[in-house]
Image 1 (cartoon, chains in turn purple, cyan):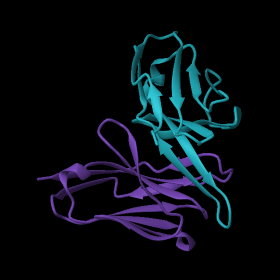
Image 2 (cartoon, each protein chain N blue to C red):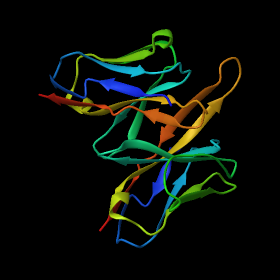
Image 3 (cartoon, rainbow over the protein chains, first blue to last red):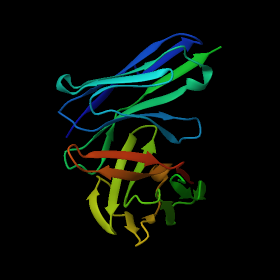
Length: 109
Length: 117
C-alpha cells in the first residue's frame, strides 16, 4: 500500500520563526489532507490539497502530485501552533486515509 | 453546521469487558470512518461505513466491530478488551463530491479516549 513519510519528526521554534514541514508519499494520489492535532487530541482540518497551492492566513500548503510530495509552510509561528501536524492520503481503494507519523512542533515564546 | 460528535469523550474499562463508542457525522455526510491512535502505531484505519454497509476494514481482530444506522450515526464495539486497546478512537465524517474531479475530505470528531486497566 501507499507509504506516507513526514519530516522532520520534531521541530522546535522560537515564536515568530517560519517553518516548512514535508510529506512524501510512495504512489500517485488524488487526495491529500493536512491536519493539526490539538493538545486534546482533535484533528483540525488545515488543507485539502491534492495538487497546487493554497493559503489560509499564516499557513500555506503546496502539493506537487507528479513528484509525490507536499509541503506545509507556517510563517510567523505562534505558541498556539504547537502540536502535531499530520499529512494523510487516500488509499488505493478510496475508502480510508493513510497517515504519516506526524511532525511534532513546539513553539516557545 | 454542527461538527462530528463522539460520545463518550473518556472511558475507563477493565480487561475482558466490552465497550461501545458512538459517532454522529456532520449533517448530510453519509460516510463514517473509525481510526485508532496509539503512541506506538500512530493513526490506523479501523473501518468505514456508507449507507449502513461496511465498505472497508483495516487490519484489526474481529473483536473490533461496528455498525451504521439509517440516520448515518455509527457505533463501534470492542469486545474482550485488552490492555493494548487503550487508545484514542477517532471518528471521521466524509464529504464526497463528484464531477470533473471527485474529492474525499474527512472531518474528525474530538475522539474517545479509552483506558483499559
